[in-house]
Length: 520
Ligand code: HXC
Image (cartoon, rainbow, N blue to C red; front, top):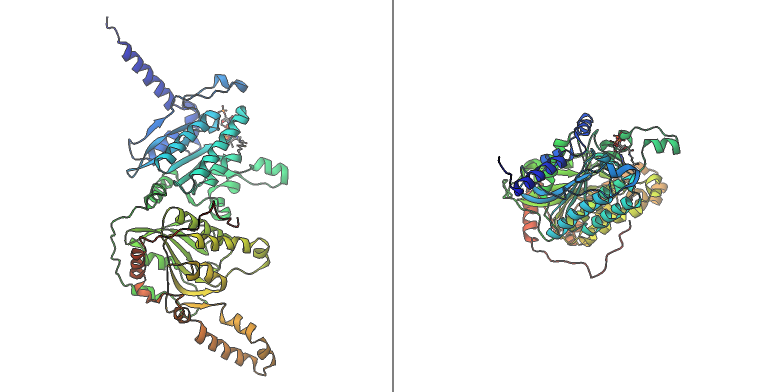
């Protein structure tokens, strides 16, 4: 008879427990998850991280609740899988909510597991990724569960600006469950899979009588295009994970590191004649600022953030001569590139992220001003536009800008202007820097003359021509040093690249204070 050694029995017991943990809420619920078109918590981690790199933590944690029959429903690990691993060889921490266990609901134990990896991420200086698929606070645990959310929110805020925080919505995120993602830097969603809302369709129907589907209310499209809650939306979980890896390739591990430079593959000295062809002769004709950006950055690779939200401003990450940069640009193709509430908030938030994580800011400007109208005024364009001024003015990272065409009024000031401490401000010869366009200016300044003239239309045309010739150019600003140089569009890439090299060791800091009071 073979006598099994005690250690072998214990190892067998460990293997069995591990297998039990791997099964989450059981085969039937895993099937249910797949039927919903969703991956399981562990499948997601496997797809997101480098193969074999995941190290799980707290697989044996159990919830402690005894209310409502929960004493008979204990699952190893409870409703979240946590640990660390690598994405493209770089350390990340991850928590992945397991909907097969009590709907991924947040218990006290789940919260403690999440907080543990958040603390490790903060203390080791690595990004934290939260994969959300949860019915929210575990109803049976009451205040313990609510307290658990508070602990997570507190950590989200403490880690903000210290390590990158990314949330991925891969199932329901209802009520308070939305607020941890909302506190993080980037929210990814998958179409038809993730839904976020404070109150669901049933509550809405009973309170307001509105009839709305889960997807219409809180799906990826709604949040990517309308609310701006989601920074990215993709058609499948697989594509979403690939894009998270792409985003991480731009980001530093923490705020003490610089964003990772890559060996440049493109010629940074390249003169691109096609850039000079882009600006139409008619100043009111739009062109695509994405084409300008694509021609200036390495390999034409630009990862847009908030691509479907507030299209009149474009923000995102790219590299110039191998160095990651944050790009902010007005988009004449959309609402003529005017700044409104949504675009101001979108750009301000991005500028602040870049400043926190040491991304030089490269700004392309073609902006006719702030959006006029009662809707914008009454919804607070003054207070929201102020956010963008605040963000640019407090940013101490290198700031390089290029005015390609219009830079009118307050919008000129806001967009990284010299007197907001822009470091290097260029303009193309097509740049027009003025308080406003010629039409509006002539109507205001020469109102009396035009009223008294017996040839008002001819006079107006003459005055507009005169205004255009005298004021609508970049040289007056360049005469005063507010534009550092007027550059040939074809040399934009090399001039920005040289400016970024020169500014690489820029030292600047805000005066000591607890924090500013940004007009939220
Ligand atoms: C405990 C929960 C749960 C919860 C779901 N389950 N939500 N258990 N607490 N919050 C359980 C279900 O009982 C079920 O268990 C399993 O998870 C799957 O749920 P289903 O309802 O069968 O799934 P589905 O039809 O896909 O619907 C998913 C759902 C729905 C939309 C998330 O379950 C739902 O509406 N849940 C409640 C959402 C909610 O109101 N949460 C509280 C939000 S307030 P079995 O055993 O049958 O598999 C909040 C406060 C936080 O979070 C405040 C912080 C500031």
